Image (cartoon, rainbow, N blue to C red; front, top):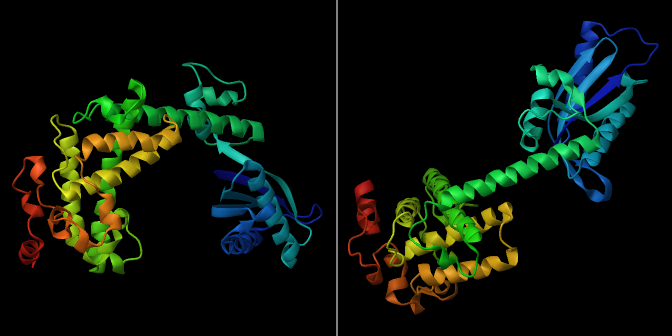
Length: 364
């Protein structure tokens, strides 16, 4: 969780006011020390990550605004105070300085957006400043731990409801299967699963754009690239054949898959590549369902086992991950992945999915 902390450092009470040059020096000194921090070790080895900071100096001290990624509010506050106190102790030029208040802060507009989802129309919580209702924004307020927890809980609930609503909207687009294809789920749960599958296809499409770009830029195959978004989830025995062209063909296949899922009359995957794309999309859908908290995680495997019995038409993709290529049937051989399957009723592939040698010649 990210926390915005504000801390105040005060110069010694007996010290004269800081002149403009001294104020610049204090900011530069603190900035150098904070910028050099890659991480902070909290209690029991917990890691706290500094993200960004800003500094302001005034006549009798300085203010630090620090964005941290920490497991909990208390840890963020404790880390900020401990680091600043250590900087003061180790810096001769800051002798006698003290770390005053250190707490999470939020601006009026941040408070409003965080709490809006939990309020009825026209309702104003007692804990918010009265100025907020009059449109005054931009000032910072120090929040207590309980208030921050309430804001985060409201925000999390709002995000959860938005995520579920998005799944239901996406589920309306799936027409290739009826809701019974997802196994023993009630209607509402099945609609969530349908929406998650459509989201999965969308995410896979975005990821393949990234893979195509990376393979193109590197002029390499998947085995020569450190990490890819989606292609890395294909059968590993063929990584030296996953080229930029292959990724482009898989992207076209995924686009066709997305269109087919919105149409009635599914007769199984058009090709092995389409079945693999559907399998990867399902893995993305599982993440969406987990985040939406609408299906018991223990039930998800059964949902997709039932769905694949309908969707894959008996095609056993596990063989591609476990059996050497020379032991596979002709329809599962790598060179056949983009060719129409006999069971699909199609005979002509999309022009971009024709023989790879022809495509290489065309692109050359």
